[in-house]
Image 1 (tube, rainbow, N blue to C red):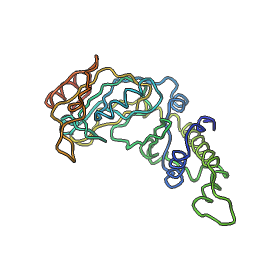
Image 2: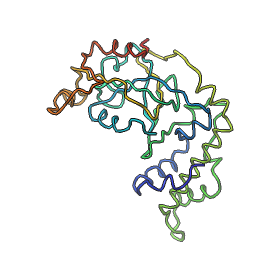
Image 3: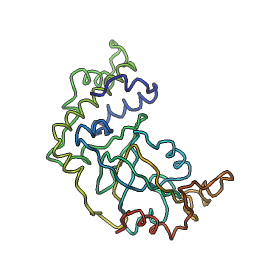
Image 4: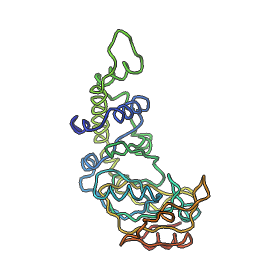
Length: 267
């Protein structure tokens, strides 16, 4: 069970944001190291790649060894803009090789989101096939449904939802989602331990969510331009930039070779 004290550290705006998202979108399922351990036992480790910009890299360094889930990949299509150093969620320019514990792997982008405590949230349909999916609104306990209804259908005669109730709703949501996944443990394990070279098109990439990761090597890519403004990457213009011991500077044409050196497949 995810105890309430584990959520108590989140401040009011972050609690309210997560609460509101779960109330309006009950298709999301939380993934974290404790949850995955319950589902699969021994968690696999993997060497993967993560593409980001200079600011993203500075943030990533602070997450080494922590439980926050990081979106990464280990295969991509030959026509993907990632092979030219461009980013998936950012402008790119920094290619990072990570080694971490796998929370989930998928043949395509999971479009996962991260909350303030590092849990990754993924739509049920991206974890389970149609036959084994479930609806959170049908499984939540009565107390959670009452909080949800009071929020969605406010009544002047009833008190407003408190921060404590929002925390309790999130706790019940996470506990319920975990219990439902445990009922489908074998199905989840089959997906978790499967390995595939499938990509649905040449511009695609897969997604592997890792936690407690370590940065193995980082490549700063010269010549990658921002999408909105025709300027160089932050690291290229930062006067205080210092190449880390595990870092290299490469050109855009060298990106595929850098990835392949670390066993990232390009199809």
